[in-house]
Image (cartoon, rainbow, N blue to C red; front, side):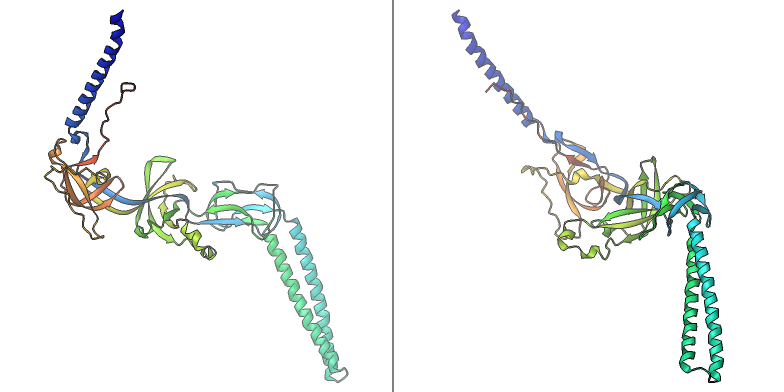
Length: 398
Protein backbone atom coordinates (compact mmCIF):
# COMPACT_ATOMS: atom_id res chain seq x y z
CA UNK A 1 0.00 0.00 0.00
CA UNK A 2 2.72 2.60 0.78
CA UNK A 3 4.31 1.88 -2.65
CA UNK A 4 1.04 2.63 -4.43
CA UNK A 5 0.78 6.01 -2.68
CA UNK A 6 4.24 7.04 -3.91
CA UNK A 7 3.59 5.86 -7.48
CA UNK A 8 1.43 8.90 -8.36
CA UNK A 9 4.07 11.60 -7.73
CA UNK A 10 6.69 9.51 -9.53
CA UNK A 11 4.52 9.26 -12.67
CA UNK A 12 3.84 12.99 -12.62
CA UNK A 13 7.55 13.82 -12.36
CA UNK A 14 8.31 11.41 -15.23
CA UNK A 15 5.67 13.02 -17.46
CA UNK A 16 7.13 16.46 -16.81
CA UNK A 17 10.63 15.24 -17.69
CA UNK A 18 9.38 13.64 -20.93
CA UNK A 19 7.50 16.78 -21.91
CA UNK A 20 10.50 18.98 -21.21
CA UNK A 21 12.70 16.71 -23.31
CA UNK A 22 10.17 16.91 -26.16
CA UNK A 23 10.19 20.68 -26.01
CA UNK A 24 13.98 20.73 -26.17
CA UNK A 25 13.99 18.34 -29.14
CA UNK A 26 11.35 20.38 -31.02
CA UNK A 27 13.16 23.63 -30.32
CA UNK A 28 16.54 22.24 -31.33
CA UNK A 29 15.12 20.75 -34.52
CA UNK A 30 13.40 24.02 -35.39
CA UNK A 31 16.58 25.96 -34.68
CA UNK A 32 18.86 23.60 -36.58
CA UNK A 33 16.53 23.37 -39.61
CA UNK A 34 17.62 25.94 -42.22
CA UNK A 35 15.04 28.71 -42.67
CA UNK A 36 15.65 28.56 -46.39
CA UNK A 37 14.07 25.09 -46.43
CA UNK A 38 10.73 26.79 -45.81
CA UNK A 39 10.99 29.20 -48.74
CA UNK A 40 8.65 29.06 -51.71
CA UNK A 41 10.74 29.57 -54.83
CA UNK A 42 10.21 30.07 -58.56
CA UNK A 43 12.52 30.34 -61.57
CA UNK A 44 13.00 33.46 -63.63
CA UNK A 45 11.45 32.57 -66.99
CA UNK A 46 10.43 34.07 -70.30
CA UNK A 47 6.98 34.53 -71.73
CA UNK A 48 4.44 37.03 -73.02
CA UNK A 49 3.11 39.72 -70.67
CA UNK A 50 -0.05 41.64 -71.51
CA UNK A 51 -0.88 44.65 -69.37
CA UNK A 52 -4.60 45.35 -69.55
CA UNK A 53 -7.39 47.35 -67.94
CA UNK A 54 -10.25 45.02 -67.00
CA UNK A 55 -13.88 46.05 -66.84
CA UNK A 56 -17.38 44.75 -67.53
CA UNK A 57 -19.98 46.05 -69.98
CA UNK A 58 -23.00 45.06 -72.02
CA UNK A 59 -23.25 44.32 -75.71
CA UNK A 60 -25.56 46.54 -77.74
CA UNK A 61 -26.24 47.14 -81.44
CA UNK A 62 -24.00 49.69 -83.09
CA UNK A 63 -27.09 51.46 -84.46
CA UNK A 64 -30.58 51.00 -83.01
CA UNK A 65 -33.79 53.00 -83.50
CA UNK A 66 -36.75 53.26 -81.16
CA UNK A 67 -40.14 53.21 -82.86
CA UNK A 68 -42.70 55.17 -80.86
CA UNK A 69 -46.22 56.44 -81.40
CA UNK A 70 -47.26 60.07 -81.41
CA UNK A 71 -50.98 59.30 -81.20
CA UNK A 72 -53.22 57.38 -78.84
CA UNK A 73 -55.57 54.55 -79.71
CA UNK A 74 -56.32 50.84 -79.79
CA UNK A 75 -53.78 48.58 -81.48
CA UNK A 76 -55.59 46.53 -84.12
CA UNK A 77 -52.67 44.88 -85.93
CA UNK A 78 -49.10 43.74 -85.09
CA UNK A 79 -47.08 42.23 -87.92
CA UNK A 80 -43.67 41.53 -86.34
CA UNK A 81 -42.22 39.83 -83.29
CA UNK A 82 -38.86 39.58 -81.53
CA UNK A 83 -35.97 38.79 -83.92
CA UNK A 84 -38.11 39.52 -86.99
CA UNK A 85 -36.10 40.94 -89.93
CA UNK A 86 -37.67 44.10 -91.32
CA UNK A 87 -37.14 46.43 -94.28
CA UNK A 88 -37.38 50.19 -94.35
CA UNK A 89 -41.05 51.21 -94.77
CA UNK A 90 -42.40 47.80 -93.73
CA UNK A 91 -45.60 48.00 -91.66
CA UNK A 92 -44.97 47.01 -88.05
CA UNK A 93 -48.36 47.70 -86.47
CA UNK A 94 -51.59 49.63 -86.93
CA UNK A 95 -53.68 51.73 -84.54
CA UNK A 96 -57.47 51.93 -84.98
CA UNK A 97 -57.90 54.82 -87.49
CA UNK A 98 -61.68 55.32 -87.14
CA UNK A 99 -61.57 58.44 -84.97
CA UNK A 100 -58.78 59.94 -87.07
CA UNK A 101 -60.74 59.35 -90.29
CA UNK A 102 -63.58 61.32 -88.75
CA UNK A 103 -61.18 64.12 -87.79
CA UNK A 104 -59.99 64.31 -91.41
CA UNK A 105 -63.59 64.50 -92.66
CA UNK A 106 -64.42 67.23 -90.15
CA UNK A 107 -61.32 69.22 -91.09
CA UNK A 108 -62.12 68.92 -94.81
CA UNK A 109 -65.69 70.12 -94.18
CA UNK A 110 -64.41 73.11 -92.22
CA UNK A 111 -62.03 73.85 -95.08
CA UNK A 112 -64.88 73.76 -97.59
CA UNK A 113 -66.92 76.18 -95.48
CA UNK A 114 -63.93 78.49 -95.16
CA UNK A 115 -63.39 78.43 -98.91
CA UNK A 116 -67.07 79.33 -99.53
CA UNK A 117 -66.89 82.16 -97.01
CA UNK A 118 -63.67 83.44 -98.52
CA UNK A 119 -65.22 83.39 -102.00
CA UNK A 120 -68.19 85.47 -100.82
CA UNK A 121 -65.93 87.99 -99.08
CA UNK A 122 -63.71 88.24 -102.13
CA UNK A 123 -66.67 88.92 -104.45
CA UNK A 124 -68.05 91.51 -102.06
CA UNK A 125 -64.67 93.24 -101.85
CA UNK A 126 -64.42 93.30 -105.67
CA UNK A 127 -67.91 94.81 -105.95
CA UNK A 128 -67.15 97.51 -103.39
CA UNK A 129 -63.92 98.33 -105.23
CA UNK A 130 -65.92 99.09 -108.36
CA UNK A 131 -68.34 101.23 -106.41
CA UNK A 132 -65.49 103.01 -104.73
CA UNK A 133 -63.96 103.81 -108.09
CA UNK A 134 -67.25 105.51 -108.95
CA UNK A 135 -67.24 107.23 -105.54
CA UNK A 136 -70.54 105.55 -104.67
CA UNK A 137 -69.33 104.14 -101.30
CA UNK A 138 -67.18 105.62 -98.62
CA UNK A 139 -63.54 104.77 -98.13
CA UNK A 140 -64.38 103.30 -94.71
CA UNK A 141 -66.80 100.78 -96.25
CA UNK A 142 -64.16 99.75 -98.78
CA UNK A 143 -61.43 99.40 -96.10
CA UNK A 144 -63.74 97.20 -94.03
CA UNK A 145 -64.33 94.95 -97.02
CA UNK A 146 -60.58 94.62 -97.61
CA UNK A 147 -60.05 93.70 -93.94
CA UNK A 148 -62.76 91.05 -94.11
CA UNK A 149 -61.08 89.62 -97.19
CA UNK A 150 -57.72 89.30 -95.37
CA UNK A 151 -59.46 87.63 -92.43
CA UNK A 152 -61.11 85.15 -94.79
CA UNK A 153 -57.75 84.33 -96.37
CA UNK A 154 -56.20 83.75 -92.91
CA UNK A 155 -59.12 81.51 -91.87
CA UNK A 156 -58.66 79.58 -95.11
CA UNK A 157 -54.99 78.94 -94.34
CA UNK A 158 -55.91 77.79 -90.83
CA UNK A 159 -58.44 75.31 -92.16
CA UNK A 160 -55.93 73.97 -94.68
CA UNK A 161 -53.40 73.42 -91.84
CA UNK A 162 -56.05 71.60 -89.82
CA UNK A 163 -56.68 69.27 -92.73
CA UNK A 164 -52.93 68.52 -93.04
CA UNK A 165 -52.68 67.84 -89.31
CA UNK A 166 -55.65 65.48 -89.40
CA UNK A 167 -54.20 63.61 -92.38
CA UNK A 168 -50.80 63.36 -90.66
CA UNK A 169 -52.39 61.86 -87.55
CA UNK A 170 -54.24 59.40 -89.77
CA UNK A 171 -50.96 58.36 -91.39
CA UNK A 172 -49.44 57.88 -87.93
CA UNK A 173 -51.96 55.14 -87.27
CA UNK A 174 -49.67 52.96 -89.39
CA UNK A 175 -46.27 52.33 -87.75
CA UNK A 176 -43.50 51.53 -90.21
CA UNK A 177 -39.85 50.61 -89.87
CA UNK A 178 -37.48 53.56 -90.39
CA UNK A 179 -34.50 51.34 -91.27
CA UNK A 180 -33.55 47.87 -92.44
CA UNK A 181 -32.74 45.69 -89.46
CA UNK A 182 -33.97 43.25 -86.83
CA UNK A 183 -36.59 43.73 -84.12
CA UNK A 184 -34.83 43.29 -80.76
CA UNK A 185 -37.58 44.70 -78.54
CA UNK A 186 -41.38 44.70 -78.73
CA UNK A 187 -43.83 46.10 -76.20
CA UNK A 188 -47.21 46.05 -77.93
CA UNK A 189 -49.93 43.50 -78.58
CA UNK A 190 -53.23 43.49 -80.45
CA UNK A 191 -55.96 44.94 -78.26
CA UNK A 192 -53.65 47.09 -76.18
CA UNK A 193 -54.41 50.79 -75.93
CA UNK A 194 -51.39 53.04 -76.30
CA UNK A 195 -51.45 56.54 -74.87
CA UNK A 196 -49.17 59.27 -76.14
CA UNK A 197 -48.44 61.97 -73.60
CA UNK A 198 -45.41 64.18 -72.97
CA UNK A 199 -43.09 61.20 -73.66
CA UNK A 200 -43.90 58.94 -76.56
CA UNK A 201 -44.10 55.26 -75.53
CA UNK A 202 -41.54 53.00 -77.19
CA UNK A 203 -43.25 50.11 -78.97
CA UNK A 204 -40.35 48.59 -80.93
CA UNK A 205 -36.56 48.78 -81.01
CA UNK A 206 -34.89 47.89 -84.30
CA UNK A 207 -31.19 47.09 -84.60
CA UNK A 208 -29.78 48.10 -87.95
CA UNK A 209 -27.09 45.40 -88.29
CA UNK A 210 -26.29 42.83 -85.60
CA UNK A 211 -23.07 41.99 -87.42
CA UNK A 212 -21.74 45.29 -86.04
CA UNK A 213 -22.07 45.71 -82.28
CA UNK A 214 -20.56 47.75 -79.49
CA UNK A 215 -19.86 47.54 -75.77
CA UNK A 216 -20.34 50.44 -73.39
CA UNK A 217 -18.00 49.68 -70.48
CA UNK A 218 -17.15 51.85 -67.45
CA UNK A 219 -13.47 52.76 -67.05
CA UNK A 220 -12.37 53.98 -63.65
CA UNK A 221 -10.65 57.35 -63.33
CA UNK A 222 -7.65 55.41 -61.96
CA UNK A 223 -7.23 53.54 -65.26
CA UNK A 224 -8.48 56.08 -67.79
CA UNK A 225 -4.97 57.57 -68.22
CA UNK A 226 -3.75 54.27 -69.66
CA UNK A 227 -6.44 53.72 -72.31
CA UNK A 228 -6.69 55.49 -75.66
CA UNK A 229 -8.94 55.18 -78.72
CA UNK A 230 -7.52 52.65 -81.16
CA UNK A 231 -6.28 50.17 -78.56
CA UNK A 232 -7.10 46.50 -79.04
CA UNK A 233 -9.69 44.87 -76.79
CA UNK A 234 -10.36 41.26 -75.91
CA UNK A 235 -13.47 40.06 -74.13
CA UNK A 236 -15.41 36.97 -73.18
CA UNK A 237 -19.07 36.28 -72.49
CA UNK A 238 -20.38 33.75 -70.00
CA UNK A 239 -22.65 32.25 -72.64
CA UNK A 240 -19.61 31.19 -74.72
CA UNK A 241 -16.87 30.57 -72.14
CA UNK A 242 -14.48 28.75 -74.46
CA UNK A 243 -14.03 31.61 -76.94
CA UNK A 244 -12.30 34.98 -76.75
CA UNK A 245 -13.59 37.79 -78.95
CA UNK A 246 -11.81 40.89 -80.17
CA UNK A 247 -12.69 44.53 -80.69
CA UNK A 248 -11.30 48.06 -80.72
CA UNK A 249 -11.71 50.96 -78.33
CA UNK A 250 -13.11 53.82 -80.41
CA UNK A 251 -14.17 56.47 -77.89
CA UNK A 252 -13.90 57.56 -74.26
CA UNK A 253 -16.90 59.60 -73.18
CA UNK A 254 -16.96 62.21 -70.46
CA UNK A 255 -19.44 61.02 -67.82
CA UNK A 256 -20.64 64.47 -66.80
CA UNK A 257 -23.84 66.16 -67.91
CA UNK A 258 -24.83 69.78 -67.16
CA UNK A 259 -27.09 68.64 -64.33
CA UNK A 260 -24.40 66.45 -62.81
CA UNK A 261 -21.89 69.28 -62.82
CA UNK A 262 -24.01 71.03 -60.24
CA UNK A 263 -23.48 68.32 -57.61
CA UNK A 264 -21.66 69.36 -54.48
CA UNK A 265 -17.91 68.92 -54.14
CA UNK A 266 -18.37 66.64 -51.15
CA UNK A 267 -20.46 64.25 -53.21
CA UNK A 268 -17.87 64.21 -55.98
CA UNK A 269 -15.08 63.36 -53.53
CA UNK A 270 -17.04 60.48 -52.01
CA UNK A 271 -17.51 58.63 -55.30
CA UNK A 272 -15.20 57.27 -57.98
CA UNK A 273 -15.78 58.71 -61.43
CA UNK A 274 -16.26 56.23 -64.26
CA UNK A 275 -15.77 57.16 -67.91
CA UNK A 276 -17.69 55.33 -70.62
CA UNK A 277 -15.49 53.40 -73.04
CA UNK A 278 -17.10 52.62 -76.42
CA UNK A 279 -15.80 49.40 -77.97
CA UNK A 280 -16.76 48.39 -81.50
CA UNK A 281 -17.10 44.66 -82.16
CA UNK A 282 -17.46 42.62 -85.35
CA UNK A 283 -20.07 39.86 -85.09
CA UNK A 284 -20.11 38.18 -88.53
CA UNK A 285 -21.39 34.83 -87.26
CA UNK A 286 -24.07 36.49 -85.07
CA UNK A 287 -23.00 34.55 -81.98
CA UNK A 288 -23.11 37.68 -79.86
CA UNK A 289 -26.48 39.07 -78.84
CA UNK A 290 -27.60 42.38 -77.34
CA UNK A 291 -27.57 42.66 -73.53
CA UNK A 292 -24.97 39.91 -73.01
CA UNK A 293 -22.46 40.78 -70.29
CA UNK A 294 -18.91 41.10 -71.63
CA UNK A 295 -15.78 40.71 -69.50
CA UNK A 296 -13.51 43.25 -71.20
CA UNK A 297 -9.73 43.63 -71.20
CA UNK A 298 -8.32 46.74 -72.88
CA UNK A 299 -4.77 45.88 -73.95
CA UNK A 300 -2.57 48.73 -72.72
CA UNK A 301 0.81 47.17 -73.47
CA UNK A 302 2.15 43.83 -74.63
CA UNK A 303 5.70 42.41 -74.52
CA UNK A 304 6.53 39.09 -76.14
CA UNK A 305 9.18 36.74 -74.73
CA UNK A 306 9.73 39.00 -71.75
CA UNK A 307 11.96 38.06 -68.81
CA UNK A 308 9.49 37.78 -65.94
CA UNK A 309 9.10 36.86 -62.28
CA UNK A 310 5.97 36.06 -60.25
CA UNK A 311 4.50 39.05 -58.46
CA UNK A 312 4.87 37.21 -55.17
CA UNK A 313 8.63 37.77 -55.37
CA UNK A 314 8.05 41.52 -55.06
CA UNK A 315 6.21 41.14 -51.76
CA UNK A 316 8.84 39.03 -49.95
CA UNK A 317 10.89 40.57 -47.14
CA UNK A 318 13.57 38.28 -45.75
CA UNK A 319 15.02 39.35 -42.35
CA UNK A 320 18.58 40.56 -42.80
CA UNK A 321 21.14 38.01 -41.54
CA UNK A 322 24.16 39.80 -39.97
CA UNK A 323 26.36 36.90 -41.03
CA UNK A 324 25.23 37.06 -44.67
CA UNK A 325 27.88 38.26 -47.14
CA UNK A 326 25.20 40.03 -49.16
CA UNK A 327 24.25 43.60 -48.35
CA UNK A 328 20.79 45.10 -48.87
CA UNK A 329 20.84 47.28 -52.01
CA UNK A 330 19.50 50.84 -51.88
CA UNK A 331 16.45 51.70 -53.93
CA UNK A 332 16.90 54.66 -56.31
CA UNK A 333 15.33 57.94 -55.28
CA UNK A 334 14.03 58.77 -58.77
CA UNK A 335 10.28 58.25 -58.90
CA UNK A 336 10.43 57.53 -62.63
CA UNK A 337 12.45 54.35 -62.08
CA UNK A 338 10.24 51.40 -61.10
CA UNK A 339 12.56 49.22 -59.02
CA UNK A 340 12.25 46.65 -56.26
CA UNK A 341 14.34 44.28 -54.18
CA UNK A 342 13.90 40.53 -54.70
CA UNK A 343 15.77 37.65 -53.07
CA UNK A 344 17.75 35.23 -55.19
CA UNK A 345 19.00 31.79 -54.16
CA UNK A 346 22.27 30.91 -55.82
CA UNK A 347 21.86 27.83 -58.00
CA UNK A 348 18.36 27.30 -56.70
CA UNK A 349 19.79 25.79 -53.51
CA UNK A 350 17.28 26.20 -50.67
CA UNK A 351 20.09 26.00 -48.13
CA UNK A 352 21.94 28.96 -49.66
CA UNK A 353 21.87 32.41 -48.14
CA UNK A 354 19.21 34.64 -49.77
CA UNK A 355 20.84 37.33 -51.87
CA UNK A 356 18.92 40.62 -52.11
CA UNK A 357 18.98 41.88 -55.69
CA UNK A 358 17.86 45.26 -57.01
CA UNK A 359 15.79 44.79 -60.18
CA UNK A 360 14.34 47.25 -62.65
CA UNK A 361 10.77 46.39 -63.58
CA UNK A 362 8.62 46.79 -66.67
CA UNK A 363 4.95 46.04 -67.28
CA UNK A 364 2.80 43.62 -65.30
CA UNK A 365 -0.31 41.55 -65.92
CA UNK A 366 -1.05 41.24 -62.16
CA UNK A 367 0.39 37.71 -62.19
CA UNK A 368 3.92 38.25 -63.49
CA UNK A 369 6.12 41.32 -63.86
CA UNK A 370 8.70 42.04 -66.54
CA UNK A 371 12.32 42.31 -65.36
CA UNK A 372 14.45 44.75 -67.33
CA UNK A 373 17.64 44.57 -65.28
CA UNK A 374 19.08 42.65 -62.33
CA UNK A 375 18.23 39.01 -63.10
CA UNK A 376 18.77 36.53 -65.87
CA UNK A 377 16.78 33.59 -67.17
CA UNK A 378 17.17 30.52 -64.96
CA UNK A 379 17.77 32.41 -61.69
CA UNK A 380 15.75 31.30 -58.68
CA UNK A 381 13.87 33.86 -56.58
CA UNK A 382 11.95 33.55 -53.31
CA UNK A 383 8.21 34.05 -53.75
CA UNK A 384 6.98 33.28 -50.24
CA UNK A 385 7.99 32.71 -46.63
CA UNK A 386 5.51 30.58 -44.68
CA UNK A 387 5.27 31.18 -40.94
CA UNK A 388 7.72 29.24 -38.77
CA UNK A 389 6.55 25.96 -37.27
CA UNK A 390 5.54 26.55 -33.69
CA UNK A 391 6.27 24.07 -30.87
CA UNK A 392 2.96 22.45 -29.92
CA UNK A 393 1.77 23.19 -26.38
CA UNK A 394 0.36 20.26 -24.45
CA UNK A 395 -2.39 21.38 -22.13
CA UNK A 396 -2.12 20.36 -18.50
CA UNK A 397 1.64 19.58 -18.44
CA UNK A 398 2.84 22.93 -17.00
